Image 1 (cartoon, rainbow, N blue to C red):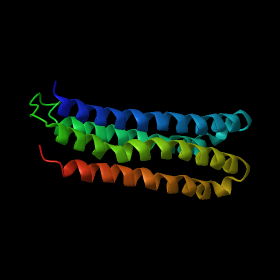
Image 2 (image 1 turned 90 degrees about the vertical axis):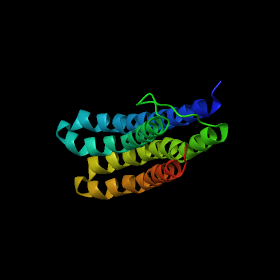
Image 3 (image 1 turned 180 degrees about the vertical axis):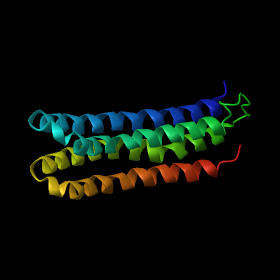
Image 4 (image 1 turned 180 degrees about the horizontal axis):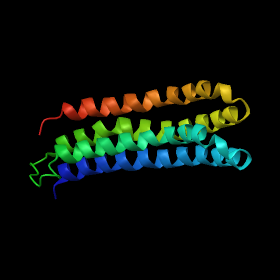
Length: 157
């Protein structure tokens, strides 16, 4: 069995899966709050959409990381090199920053955005202030993505 390849694919798959799960939860939390606002004022859809979409970016970051792993191990070309156990483990651990940062930050960003939706509903002029708080949480997902990219780039196959 090729454990190096298995660990590599597992790392990429978990990056996609965990960041995606976090985004689904975060978007769900913000979306539920936005739907409550829209029952009272459907004209606020555009404002609510930005706050609902924000926690979805972590899923994109996880997908990007999984795609980079697929490229690195040759899944897209069919030219899969021999990947040692230690190389596979290295690729797996290179995916951990976005796995964890994407998963956890998306959930918390959804909570922050849901609270921001409540602010935007009552005080539309404060919408951008509420969005800034959501973007602050995004910073840590971006750092997780960058860490994973830097770590993946440094692994030689």
